[in-house]
Structure formats: structure tokens, C-alpha cells
Length: 222
Image (cartoon, rainbow, N blue to C red; front, top):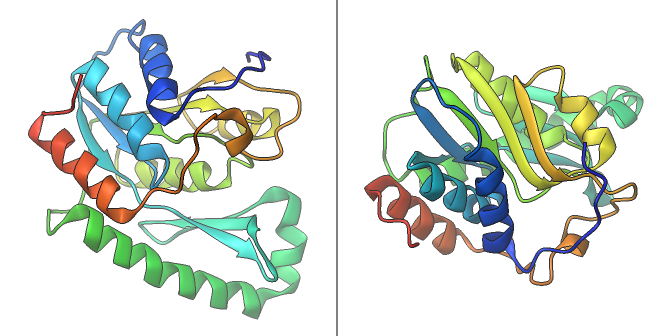
């Protein structure tokens, strides 16, 4: 756990620093770097380039609180993975029907994004792979937890979570389920991921697809 509090210039700069940390590890099996869209993909692209690894995407979707969509009460991932955010487990269970409707709604968006980002490719084959799951930041850790469980269900041999910044709570949530969690900094107070970036623009699907296409061709820019 690193309690430094400094701001990254942008996602590319954060990804380069994260890649430097990951380069210190020894990799014993084929590595696949998976970015969580949208913001995790440019960070993951820097990691994949540095490691000489393949780049792809693992689509996850946050379940937002009714009336407060930015507040995560759960998350979903491929393989029928549904995660309840621990702090709001009581809320989601007491509003069971409403929560299920939200899951159905986000499931449709998850399928749409998979179709866009995967571009007609075969489903991810994670069996026997070392998978590095990358996001631009972990606030609650809920969506990343869904990604970890999806990768585990898909047969990944080893799962490493990597992020430039995370809350202390998110890191604690993920450590029991990932094989390793690599975070550059865990500030004592993390109210939003954007506060730790000088530039934190909203990414569009087209930019995500561009990076993924370069990564799949092994042409990520230096």
C-alpha cells in the first residue's frame, strides 16, 4: 500500500508509470493485458506496450444507485457475474426487483460494448493465461471485482489487478480474490478518480476501438 498523493498528467502518463512497476515482475506464462473500458484501456495500452504483451478488453458495467447513477451499488461482467457493493448490499437486496431491472439494463449495454470493442472476434480465451486487469482508478473496487471473478471463471491461471490509484477500501476488497494487486498510490481520501489526473477527459468508443486495434496488431505507439 502506497499512501502518496500526487496527480498524474493523464492516463498515458499514469499507464507508463504503472508499466514501469510491472516490468519489475517476472512473467512465467503468456501475459494478456485487459483494459476495463473505457478509461482503463489507454492505461492498459501503455502496460501492454512495455511488457510486449497482447492487449484486449474485458467489458464490465457498474450498477448505479437509482437517482444517483454515479454511486456504484454493484457491477456485472461476462459469464453472468453480478457483484453487490458491500457497503450497499442491504440497499440492493431490499430493492431486489429494482436492482434486477438495473442489471438487465446494464447487461444490454455490456453486450453492445462487447460487440463494438470485440469487433466480431472470438470470445476471450483466458485458460492458462496470466491476465493483467487494468483500470485508470479504483474507487469502490466493485467493477474490478466483477472483472476478477469473470477472469477466474474463464480459466485464467493468474490474475493481477493493476491501477495507478485506488482507495484503501478498494485495495482491501480485491486482495483476497486477485493473485496480486499492484497500485501506485492509495490516498487516504479518494472521492473521485478524476481528481488524481490533470487531464481526465471522457473517452469515446472510437478511441477505445482504435487503441484495441493497434494493440491486437502489435502496433502500439512508443
